[in-house]
Amino acid sequence: MSSEFLLCVSGLYKNFGGVQAVHDLSFDLAPGELLGIIGPNGSGKTTAINLITGFVKPSRGEITYRNKDITGQPPYKIVRQGIARTFQMVKPFYQLPAYKNMIIPLYSPRVKGMVGGKYGDRDAVALDLLEEVGFERDAYVAYKAASVLPQGYLKRLELAKAIALQPDLLILDELFSGLSLAEVAGTVPIIEKLRIEGKTIIMVEHRLKELFRIADRVIVLNYGQKIADGKAEDVMESEAVKNAYLGTE
Amino acid sequence: MKKRRERIDRGIKVRAGDVFALCSWREVLYLAGPKLLPIIGCLILPLLLNAYWQKVFLSVAVFALLAISWDLLAQTGMISLGQALFYGMGAYVSGILNHYWGLHPFITIPVAAILGGIICTLLLLPVLRLRGIYFSMVTLIIPLMLVRLIEATRIFGGTEGLSGMTPLPSKWLELYLIVLVLLCALFGFRRMLSSDFGLVLKGINDNDRSVMNAGINIYLFKTQALFIASAIGAFTGAFMTHVYMFVGMPVFALDYSILPIAAAIVGGPGSLAGATLGAFILVPLSEILRGIGGLRIVFYGLFLVVFIVALPEGIFHYIQRKYHRFERWVEVD
Ligand SMILES: Nc1ncnc2c1ncn2[C@@H]1O[C@H](COP(=O)(O)OP(=O)(O)O)[C@@H](O)[C@H]1O
Ligand SMILES: [Mg+2]
Image (cartoon, rainbow over all chains, first blue to last red; front, side, top):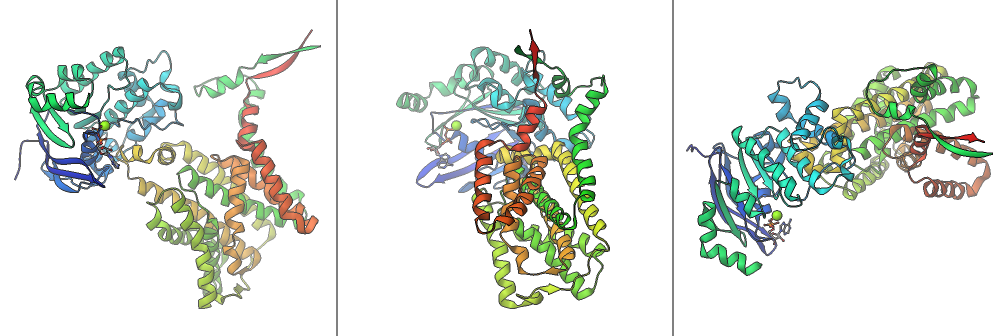
């Protein structure tokens, strides 16, 4: 059975002890699509991403990527097939300068394979990628240790590390949280550029206004269950979504 | 007479990491000095020592290598409490090869380093996934188990051990072989750690999930680091087997696990040069204190505590910081 979808998630369950973090989640993702995932805190968005990227093993259900079953594979194998993610809680290498953080994804077998073994100077590529996500070259921000960088830069370092892997599917977990308005405004064009390059993107977001401007489709989670799926305007009109958001805020 | 601080810009030039011109012999010396000092020191020192201190020097070099091995693992996020495993494994492998097959030390030592490295890596492979203290506990327990195993089954000479090993052809060969290996390990692995491969190892220590998320199989890298570290350790054991012309249960003693850690910590954790420096201080100190008898361990322990409290960053990092200091005192009137 072959489908035109890049990613198919079907009947995914995950329990943590008694907590049903993800409950019967199914959705398909077409190539080139930008999917938003929203929902109140604790509704299972991060867990859903951990399941897709292999950081957490599902209790039940199946994930297929390019018509291949990837359920339960370790993260590094999933990344090599072209799925890259950022973490909601940033995970930089604190002891290293920002640009040295980039060397580790650039060293990965996926990137080595794509450039045919000869990368030239990884440091130079790292600095270019960081400049793209807004590390001002003149101010030498990229040379500062990750431990002294403010949250906004760490978030964008996460993004740069994911982009460095040249993924086909990019998953961003609350990238905009912790960014200032100006930083968000600076980041949106980067995402739009990635779309033009043909990347498929999943964005988990709390900043609904910015998300709705760029998302093709939105999924709403509540207590681990999908309660709505469709165009942003339609989804926000749905009764279930209104209740979920009103109930928690 | 008043004094003020004056900035020295040489450090900045050096630290910028960019291309810069060497303007004087002083600057050449400033850059090359830290590398030349240990090389020249290690080459000359054996010539100046008497027979007794030459033996101590061998032991210093062995513990320096074990400390380097420990630090390599620590920089990859694996805290080993069982360097004795590597040492003892190398000692027994070379001892067995020499005793039962009569192979020459020039063969048994390299074979024991590689084979011992492989055996230790395979033994620890199942626990590579364990993090933190769990990995440490297993490394602590395995050498203790091996001792009991040898005692109970009486294999390889049992409690008596195997004696009558072929010694190395000459005392000078012993001394300069270990100096050569020490210098190669120190500079070679320093270089390795500052390469992109080394960066991945340090990344695993810093944040292993983030390394996995970069499409890198962290267990493959940890295995490689473990093999390198255990091969270094196994080399030291194999070497000492031929120096002592004996191998027995004491090769798994706790000393070989604890002293390298103390050396790395006193010298400066996170740097191979620090680990080496630590061994060069602690091992001779332990020899000097031998003279005072029963209270030796007390003084030794006291010294360790004072050092760790006074210089928690480690001696090497302290010296390095002072060396690269950007300013000096000058007199003004
Ligand atoms: N590793 C874990 N162990 C136990 N419970 C977890 C774990 N990860 C998430 N949970 C629980 O699962 C639920 C969903 O969490 P999460 O996926 O982080 O939500 P969201 O990202 O939507 O805020 C929460 O109730 C959370 O406490
Ligand atoms: Mg979350």
